[in-house]
Image 1 (cartoon, rainbow, N blue to C red):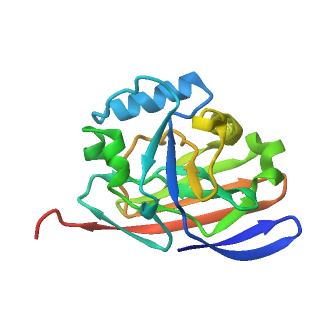
Image 2 (image 1 turned 45 degrees about the horizontal axis):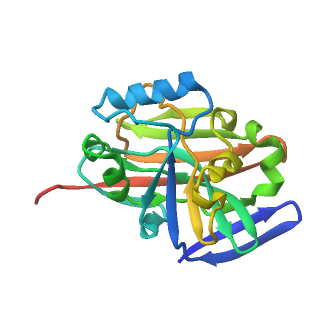
Length: 225
């Protein structure tokens, strides 16, 4: 079970949530140039180009994790900060997640690679209806600790990505079923995709004056021992 603090304009509550499905939106940018940039940076490390955009990958709901540490197999993984929409019984909520991915496996198959790493989620949710009218102003960023140095790894506004309403309308049935979490796309990596020992992410709402944050250390397990 996952636990979230749901922060709204009127107060905060805490809930437990057992996800039943996970959808990962890929190539979900609105800007064709930005999509091309991300496709090319992945192609540079051997990831096949998509046949169409956007695409929706399914992954096991059990890969959703919380906490401050993520174990991965081998040195070829990296995080990607993304907005996450979660469908609860009382509507849609927005959170923060990392589509942490095995880049070596990604060169063999993107859908396969999505299953191989845990998908860290932050502990905070905002009601989607409270941010929908200024969605494009929300600011997404990530920091990575690489070689002992904390660097800005991703940064931009959600104006670069398709809105949740747009993505959901493209799903079969045009709705996000209760119990489903959907990752909503990412931004290009500043300086290129590369592994890190720690990944930190945040989603800032400059209109309502609030920020959600989450970070995790990456423990690299040896492939053989």
